Amino acid sequence: MRPDLILLCFAYVLSQFFRAFLAVLTKALEADIGTTPEDLAFASGIWFLVFAAMQVPVGAALDKIGPRRTAASLLLVGGGGGALLFSVATTPAHVTLAMGLIGVGCSPVLMASYYIFATSYPPARFATLAALMLGVGTVGNLVASYPMALASELIGWRLSLVGLAALSSLTAVGLYILIRDPERDAAAQKGSLLDLLKIRALWFIFPVMFVNYMAAAGIRGLWIGPYLSDTFALSTGQIGTASLVMGLAMIAGTLAYGPADRLFKTRKWVVFGGNLIAAIALFWLAFALSASVWLSVVLMAAIGFFGASFPVIIAHARSFFPSHLTGRGVTLMNLFGIGGVGIMQFASGRLHTSLSATDPALAYQTLFLLFGALLVAGLAVYLLSQDRTD
Image 1 (spheres, helix red, strand yellow):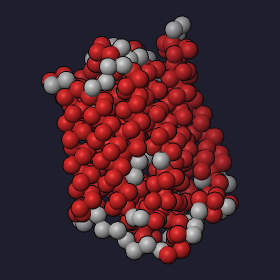
Image 2 (tube, one colour):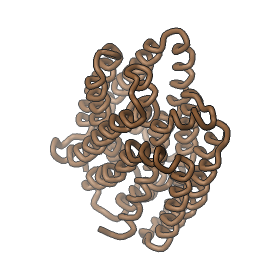
Image 3 (cartoon, rainbow, N blue to C red):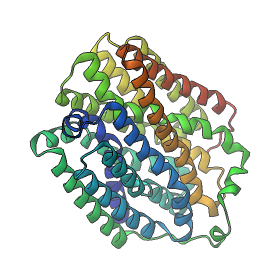
Protein backbone atom coordinates (compact mmCIF):
# COMPACT_ATOMS: atom_id res chain seq x y z
CA MET A 1 0.00 0.00 0.00
CA ARG A 2 2.94 2.35 -0.59
CA PRO A 3 1.65 5.69 -1.97
CA ASP A 4 4.16 5.68 -4.82
CA LEU A 5 3.06 2.22 -5.97
CA ILE A 6 -0.60 3.21 -5.76
CA LEU A 7 0.07 6.24 -7.95
CA LEU A 8 2.18 4.16 -10.34
CA CYS A 9 -0.79 1.80 -10.60
CA PHE A 10 -3.02 4.74 -11.50
CA ALA A 11 -0.47 5.88 -14.08
CA TYR A 12 -0.64 2.39 -15.56
CA VAL A 13 -4.43 2.75 -15.72
CA LEU A 14 -3.77 5.73 -17.99
CA SER A 15 -1.29 3.70 -20.05
CA GLN A 16 -3.84 0.93 -20.57
CA PHE A 17 -6.46 3.50 -21.50
CA PHE A 18 -4.29 5.13 -24.13
CA ARG A 19 -3.48 1.84 -25.84
CA ALA A 20 -7.14 0.82 -26.13
CA PHE A 21 -9.35 3.90 -26.51
CA LEU A 22 -9.10 4.23 -30.30
CA ALA A 23 -11.41 1.23 -30.75
CA VAL A 24 -14.45 3.09 -29.41
CA LEU A 25 -13.65 6.35 -31.21
CA THR A 26 -13.67 4.72 -34.65
CA LYS A 27 -16.90 6.31 -35.84
CA ALA A 28 -16.36 9.70 -34.15
CA LEU A 29 -12.89 10.16 -35.62
CA GLU A 30 -14.05 9.02 -39.04
CA ALA A 31 -16.87 11.57 -38.98
CA ASP A 32 -14.77 14.49 -37.67
CA ILE A 33 -11.38 14.12 -39.32
CA GLY A 34 -11.82 11.33 -41.88
CA THR A 35 -9.77 8.55 -40.29
CA THR A 36 -10.12 5.02 -41.68
CA PRO A 37 -9.56 1.70 -39.85
CA GLU A 38 -6.16 1.53 -41.54
CA ASP A 39 -5.30 5.03 -40.24
CA LEU A 40 -6.18 3.99 -36.70
CA ALA A 41 -4.28 0.71 -37.05
CA PHE A 42 -1.24 2.72 -38.14
CA ALA A 43 -1.61 5.20 -35.26
CA SER A 44 -2.08 2.36 -32.78
CA GLY A 45 0.95 0.59 -34.22
CA ILE A 46 3.01 3.77 -33.80
CA TRP A 47 2.00 3.89 -30.11
CA PHE A 48 3.19 0.33 -29.57
CA LEU A 49 6.39 0.65 -31.61
CA VAL A 50 7.43 3.92 -29.97
CA PHE A 51 6.58 2.40 -26.60
CA ALA A 52 8.70 -0.65 -27.45
CA ALA A 53 11.63 1.38 -28.77
CA MET A 54 11.63 3.44 -25.58
CA GLN A 55 12.21 0.31 -23.47
CA VAL A 56 15.94 0.37 -24.23
CA PRO A 57 16.61 3.90 -22.87
CA VAL A 58 14.01 3.41 -20.13
CA GLY A 59 15.77 0.24 -18.92
CA ALA A 60 19.12 2.01 -18.78
CA ALA A 61 17.54 4.97 -16.99
CA LEU A 62 15.89 2.73 -14.37
CA ASP A 63 19.22 1.10 -13.56
CA LYS A 64 21.19 4.35 -13.57
CA ILE A 65 18.92 7.15 -12.31
CA GLY A 66 16.00 5.21 -10.83
CA PRO A 67 12.23 5.09 -11.47
CA ARG A 68 11.34 8.48 -9.94
CA ARG A 69 12.81 10.81 -12.52
CA THR A 70 12.36 8.33 -15.36
CA ALA A 71 8.60 7.83 -14.91
CA ALA A 72 7.68 11.39 -13.92
CA SER A 73 9.50 13.24 -16.70
CA LEU A 74 8.37 11.00 -19.56
CA LEU A 75 4.74 10.86 -18.44
CA LEU A 76 4.59 14.65 -18.10
CA VAL A 77 6.02 15.42 -21.54
CA GLY A 78 4.67 12.45 -23.47
CA GLY A 79 1.40 11.62 -21.74
CA GLY A 80 0.24 15.15 -21.01
CA GLY A 81 1.63 16.68 -24.18
CA GLY A 82 0.47 13.87 -26.45
CA ALA A 83 -3.11 13.90 -25.15
CA LEU A 84 -3.26 17.68 -25.60
CA LEU A 85 -2.01 17.35 -29.17
CA PHE A 86 -4.62 14.66 -29.86
CA SER A 87 -7.38 16.98 -28.63
CA VAL A 88 -6.65 19.48 -31.42
CA ALA A 89 -6.04 16.91 -34.20
CA THR A 90 -7.53 17.78 -37.59
CA THR A 91 -5.95 15.06 -39.76
CA PRO A 92 -5.04 11.37 -39.37
CA ALA A 93 -1.36 12.41 -39.31
CA HIS A 94 -2.00 14.48 -36.17
CA VAL A 95 -3.55 11.44 -34.49
CA THR A 96 -0.50 9.36 -35.40
CA LEU A 97 1.93 11.97 -34.06
CA ALA A 98 -0.07 12.32 -30.84
CA MET A 99 -0.18 8.55 -30.33
CA GLY A 100 3.59 8.34 -30.78
CA LEU A 101 4.14 11.02 -28.15
CA ILE A 102 1.71 9.31 -25.77
CA GLY A 103 3.67 6.08 -26.32
CA VAL A 104 6.79 7.87 -25.04
CA GLY A 105 4.88 9.04 -21.97
CA CYS A 106 3.47 5.62 -21.11
CA SER A 107 6.69 3.68 -21.76
CA PRO A 108 8.25 3.78 -18.24
CA VAL A 109 5.16 3.38 -16.04
CA LEU A 110 4.72 -0.39 -15.70
CA MET A 111 8.45 -1.07 -15.83
CA ALA A 112 9.11 1.43 -13.04
CA SER A 113 6.82 -0.58 -10.77
CA TYR A 114 8.34 -3.90 -11.94
CA TYR A 115 11.80 -2.50 -11.20
CA ILE A 116 10.69 -1.66 -7.65
CA PHE A 117 9.17 -5.14 -7.20
CA ALA A 118 12.31 -6.87 -8.50
CA THR A 119 14.71 -4.86 -6.34
CA SER A 120 12.67 -4.43 -3.14
CA TYR A 121 10.63 -7.64 -2.70
CA PRO A 122 11.37 -11.42 -2.52
CA PRO A 123 11.88 -12.96 -6.01
CA ALA A 124 9.21 -15.62 -5.43
CA ARG A 125 6.57 -12.91 -5.15
CA PHE A 126 7.47 -11.08 -8.34
CA ALA A 127 4.85 -12.77 -10.56
CA THR A 128 2.06 -12.15 -8.04
CA LEU A 129 2.98 -8.49 -7.52
CA ALA A 130 3.49 -7.95 -11.25
CA ALA A 131 0.13 -9.53 -12.04
CA LEU A 132 -1.60 -7.48 -9.35
CA MET A 133 -0.20 -4.25 -10.79
CA LEU A 134 -1.10 -5.34 -14.31
CA GLY A 135 -4.56 -6.54 -13.33
CA VAL A 136 -5.56 -3.47 -11.35
CA GLY A 137 -3.99 -1.18 -13.94
CA THR A 138 -5.99 -2.84 -16.68
CA VAL A 139 -8.98 -0.96 -15.32
CA GLY A 140 -7.79 1.53 -17.94
CA ASN A 141 -9.04 -0.96 -20.52
CA LEU A 142 -12.50 -0.65 -19.00
CA VAL A 143 -12.44 3.16 -18.95
CA ALA A 144 -11.42 3.00 -22.60
CA SER A 145 -14.57 1.08 -23.47
CA TYR A 146 -18.10 2.06 -22.48
CA PRO A 147 -17.22 5.10 -20.27
CA MET A 148 -15.05 6.57 -23.05
CA ALA A 149 -17.81 5.95 -25.59
CA LEU A 150 -20.27 7.67 -23.26
CA ALA A 151 -17.94 10.63 -22.63
CA SER A 152 -17.41 11.00 -26.38
CA GLU A 153 -21.15 11.17 -26.93
CA LEU A 154 -21.83 13.57 -24.03
CA ILE A 155 -18.97 16.09 -24.15
CA GLY A 156 -17.11 15.15 -27.32
CA TRP A 157 -13.83 13.36 -27.81
CA ARG A 158 -11.79 16.59 -27.96
CA LEU A 159 -12.82 17.82 -24.51
CA SER A 160 -12.33 14.30 -23.15
CA LEU A 161 -8.72 14.36 -24.38
CA VAL A 162 -8.10 17.77 -22.78
CA GLY A 163 -9.17 16.29 -19.44
CA LEU A 164 -6.86 13.32 -19.98
CA ALA A 165 -3.94 15.66 -20.71
CA ALA A 166 -4.49 17.46 -17.40
CA LEU A 167 -4.87 14.17 -15.51
CA SER A 168 -1.67 12.75 -17.01
CA SER A 169 0.30 15.87 -16.11
CA LEU A 170 -0.94 15.91 -12.51
CA THR A 171 -0.11 12.21 -12.16
CA ALA A 172 3.43 12.85 -13.40
CA VAL A 173 3.96 15.57 -10.80
CA GLY A 174 2.66 13.22 -8.11
CA LEU A 175 5.09 10.50 -9.18
CA TYR A 176 8.02 12.89 -8.88
CA ILE A 177 6.94 13.78 -5.34
CA LEU A 178 6.07 10.29 -4.07
CA ILE A 179 8.34 7.67 -5.68
CA ARG A 180 11.17 6.39 -3.50
CA ASP A 181 14.05 5.08 -5.59
CA PRO A 182 15.46 1.70 -4.43
CA GLU A 183 19.18 1.48 -3.76
CA ARG A 184 20.98 0.98 -7.04
CA ASP A 185 23.52 -1.77 -7.63
CA ALA A 186 26.91 -0.17 -8.34
CA ALA A 187 27.50 -2.78 -11.03
CA ALA A 188 24.52 -1.39 -12.96
CA GLN A 189 26.79 1.35 -14.27
CA LYS A 190 28.86 -1.29 -16.08
CA GLY A 191 26.29 -3.77 -17.41
CA SER A 192 24.76 -3.59 -20.87
CA LEU A 193 21.92 -4.94 -22.93
CA LEU A 194 24.41 -7.17 -24.73
CA ASP A 195 25.05 -9.03 -21.48
CA LEU A 196 21.38 -10.00 -21.39
CA LEU A 197 21.32 -11.09 -25.01
CA LYS A 198 24.18 -13.51 -24.26
CA ILE A 199 21.93 -15.47 -21.87
CA ARG A 200 20.90 -18.47 -24.01
CA ALA A 201 17.88 -19.38 -21.87
CA LEU A 202 16.17 -16.10 -22.75
CA TRP A 203 16.13 -16.82 -26.48
CA PHE A 204 13.53 -19.54 -25.98
CA ILE A 205 11.31 -17.11 -24.05
CA PHE A 206 11.58 -14.10 -26.38
CA PRO A 207 9.32 -15.60 -29.13
CA VAL A 208 6.36 -16.32 -26.84
CA MET A 209 6.79 -12.86 -25.30
CA PHE A 210 6.71 -11.41 -28.82
CA VAL A 211 3.38 -13.05 -29.75
CA ASN A 212 1.63 -13.38 -26.37
CA TYR A 213 0.02 -9.94 -26.22
CA MET A 214 -0.61 -9.51 -29.96
CA ALA A 215 -4.11 -10.93 -30.16
CA ALA A 216 -5.58 -9.52 -26.94
CA ALA A 217 -4.11 -6.04 -27.46
CA GLY A 218 -4.86 -6.01 -31.18
CA ILE A 219 -8.47 -7.10 -30.84
CA ARG A 220 -9.30 -5.18 -27.66
CA GLY A 221 -7.39 -2.06 -28.64
CA LEU A 222 -8.48 -1.82 -32.27
CA TRP A 223 -10.28 -4.59 -34.15
CA ILE A 224 -13.17 -5.34 -31.80
CA GLY A 225 -14.85 -2.11 -32.93
CA PRO A 226 -14.63 -2.48 -36.73
CA TYR A 227 -15.29 -6.25 -36.53
CA LEU A 228 -18.49 -5.99 -34.49
CA SER A 229 -19.65 -2.96 -36.48
CA ASP A 230 -19.06 -4.53 -39.90
CA THR A 231 -20.25 -8.03 -39.01
CA PHE A 232 -23.16 -7.39 -36.66
CA ALA A 233 -23.87 -3.65 -37.23
CA LEU A 234 -23.46 -2.84 -33.52
CA SER A 235 -23.66 0.77 -32.31
CA THR A 236 -20.84 2.63 -30.52
CA GLY A 237 -22.51 1.94 -27.16
CA GLN A 238 -22.89 -1.78 -27.90
CA ILE A 239 -19.26 -1.99 -29.03
CA GLY A 240 -18.29 -0.26 -25.80
CA THR A 241 -20.19 -2.91 -23.82
CA ALA A 242 -18.47 -5.74 -25.71
CA SER A 243 -15.10 -4.07 -25.13
CA LEU A 244 -15.95 -3.81 -21.44
CA VAL A 245 -16.60 -7.57 -21.29
CA MET A 246 -13.25 -8.34 -22.93
CA GLY A 247 -11.49 -5.84 -20.67
CA LEU A 248 -12.96 -7.49 -17.56
CA ALA A 249 -11.82 -10.88 -18.83
CA MET A 250 -8.28 -9.55 -19.31
CA ILE A 251 -8.22 -8.26 -15.73
CA ALA A 252 -9.56 -11.55 -14.34
CA GLY A 253 -7.03 -13.50 -16.39
CA THR A 254 -4.11 -11.40 -15.21
CA LEU A 255 -5.09 -11.81 -11.56
CA ALA A 256 -5.60 -15.56 -12.05
CA TYR A 257 -2.16 -15.98 -13.62
CA GLY A 258 -0.43 -14.05 -10.79
CA PRO A 259 -0.18 -16.80 -8.13
CA ALA A 260 -0.40 -19.66 -10.64
CA ASP A 261 3.38 -20.27 -10.82
CA ARG A 262 3.52 -20.82 -7.05
CA LEU A 263 0.29 -22.84 -7.03
CA PHE A 264 1.35 -25.23 -9.80
CA LYS A 265 5.11 -24.92 -9.08
CA THR A 266 5.89 -24.21 -12.72
CA ARG A 267 6.00 -21.14 -14.92
CA LYS A 268 6.61 -22.77 -18.27
CA TRP A 269 3.54 -24.99 -18.29
CA VAL A 270 1.24 -22.32 -16.86
CA VAL A 271 2.22 -20.04 -19.73
CA PHE A 272 2.08 -22.79 -22.35
CA GLY A 273 -1.30 -24.20 -21.31
CA GLY A 274 -3.05 -20.85 -21.04
CA ASN A 275 -1.79 -19.57 -24.37
CA LEU A 276 -2.71 -22.80 -26.11
CA ILE A 277 -6.31 -22.27 -25.02
CA ALA A 278 -6.12 -18.68 -26.29
CA ALA A 279 -4.92 -19.97 -29.67
CA ILE A 280 -7.83 -22.42 -29.86
CA ALA A 281 -10.25 -19.56 -29.12
CA LEU A 282 -8.69 -17.51 -31.96
CA PHE A 283 -9.15 -20.34 -34.47
CA TRP A 284 -12.72 -20.88 -33.27
CA LEU A 285 -13.48 -17.17 -33.68
CA ALA A 286 -12.06 -17.24 -37.20
CA PHE A 287 -14.28 -20.12 -38.30
CA ALA A 288 -17.42 -18.94 -36.46
CA LEU A 289 -16.97 -15.36 -37.57
CA SER A 290 -20.61 -14.37 -38.06
CA ALA A 291 -22.41 -17.20 -36.25
CA SER A 292 -23.49 -15.19 -33.21
CA VAL A 293 -22.54 -11.88 -31.62
CA TRP A 294 -22.68 -13.54 -28.20
CA LEU A 295 -20.33 -16.34 -29.24
CA SER A 296 -17.90 -13.81 -30.72
CA VAL A 297 -17.85 -11.75 -27.52
CA VAL A 298 -17.36 -14.88 -25.37
CA LEU A 299 -14.48 -16.06 -27.57
CA MET A 300 -12.83 -12.62 -27.48
CA ALA A 301 -13.20 -12.64 -23.69
CA ALA A 302 -11.53 -16.08 -23.62
CA ILE A 303 -8.65 -14.72 -25.72
CA GLY A 304 -8.27 -11.87 -23.24
CA PHE A 305 -8.43 -14.15 -20.18
CA PHE A 306 -6.12 -16.95 -21.28
CA GLY A 307 -3.73 -14.63 -23.11
CA ALA A 308 -3.05 -12.61 -19.95
CA SER A 309 0.16 -14.46 -19.04
CA PHE A 310 2.38 -11.39 -19.60
CA PRO A 311 3.58 -11.10 -15.94
CA VAL A 312 4.37 -14.82 -15.64
CA ILE A 313 6.47 -14.72 -18.82
CA ILE A 314 8.40 -11.75 -17.45
CA ALA A 315 8.81 -13.57 -14.11
CA HIS A 316 10.13 -16.62 -15.98
CA ALA A 317 12.68 -14.47 -17.82
CA ARG A 318 13.55 -12.45 -14.70
CA SER A 319 14.74 -15.62 -12.97
CA PHE A 320 17.68 -15.63 -15.43
CA PHE A 321 18.63 -11.93 -15.04
CA PRO A 322 21.72 -10.87 -13.06
CA SER A 323 20.61 -8.47 -10.31
CA HIS A 324 22.47 -5.44 -11.70
CA LEU A 325 20.60 -5.73 -15.01
CA THR A 326 17.10 -5.92 -13.56
CA GLY A 327 15.89 -2.66 -15.12
CA ARG A 328 17.24 -3.48 -18.55
CA GLY A 329 15.98 -7.05 -18.25
CA VAL A 330 12.34 -6.27 -17.55
CA THR A 331 12.28 -3.54 -20.17
CA LEU A 332 13.89 -5.86 -22.75
CA MET A 333 11.05 -8.32 -22.21
CA ASN A 334 8.55 -5.50 -22.45
CA LEU A 335 10.18 -4.43 -25.72
CA PHE A 336 9.48 -7.85 -27.19
CA GLY A 337 5.92 -7.92 -25.87
CA ILE A 338 4.89 -4.44 -26.94
CA GLY A 339 7.00 -4.47 -30.10
CA GLY A 340 5.17 -7.55 -31.31
CA VAL A 341 1.85 -5.77 -30.89
CA GLY A 342 3.09 -2.70 -32.74
CA ILE A 343 4.38 -4.66 -35.71
CA MET A 344 1.16 -6.65 -35.87
CA GLN A 345 -0.95 -3.48 -35.77
CA PHE A 346 0.82 -2.25 -38.90
CA ALA A 347 0.48 -5.63 -40.61
CA SER A 348 -3.15 -6.06 -39.59
CA GLY A 349 -4.11 -2.66 -40.96
CA ARG A 350 -2.59 -3.42 -44.36
CA LEU A 351 -4.05 -6.92 -44.36
CA HIS A 352 -7.53 -5.66 -43.57
CA THR A 353 -7.37 -2.96 -46.24
CA SER A 354 -6.17 -5.36 -48.93
CA LEU A 355 -8.88 -7.94 -48.28
CA SER A 356 -11.88 -5.95 -47.06
CA ALA A 357 -12.53 -4.23 -50.38
CA THR A 358 -13.55 -7.55 -51.93
CA ASP A 359 -14.58 -9.65 -48.92
CA PRO A 360 -14.85 -7.99 -45.46
CA ALA A 361 -15.57 -11.32 -43.74
CA LEU A 362 -12.44 -12.88 -45.22
CA ALA A 363 -10.39 -9.93 -43.93
CA TYR A 364 -11.39 -10.57 -40.31
CA GLN A 365 -11.15 -14.34 -40.68
CA THR A 366 -7.60 -14.08 -42.04
CA LEU A 367 -6.67 -11.65 -39.28
CA PHE A 368 -7.83 -13.97 -36.49
CA LEU A 369 -6.19 -16.99 -38.14
CA LEU A 370 -2.92 -15.08 -38.35
CA PHE A 371 -3.09 -14.16 -34.66
CA GLY A 372 -3.65 -17.82 -33.79
CA ALA A 373 -0.89 -19.15 -36.05
CA LEU A 374 1.70 -16.72 -34.68
CA LEU A 375 0.78 -17.66 -31.11
CA VAL A 376 1.20 -21.37 -31.90
CA ALA A 377 4.60 -20.67 -33.51
CA GLY A 378 5.78 -18.81 -30.40
CA LEU A 379 4.63 -21.67 -28.17
CA ALA A 380 6.52 -24.19 -30.31
CA VAL A 381 9.80 -22.41 -29.56
CA TYR A 382 8.82 -21.92 -25.92
CA LEU A 383 8.58 -25.72 -25.53
CA LEU A 384 12.40 -25.76 -25.63
CA SER A 385 12.74 -23.31 -22.74
CA GLN A 386 14.09 -24.19 -19.31
CA ASP A 387 11.46 -24.07 -16.57
CA ARG A 388 12.55 -22.13 -13.48
CA THR A 389 10.82 -20.88 -10.36
CA ASP A 390 12.21 -18.89 -7.41
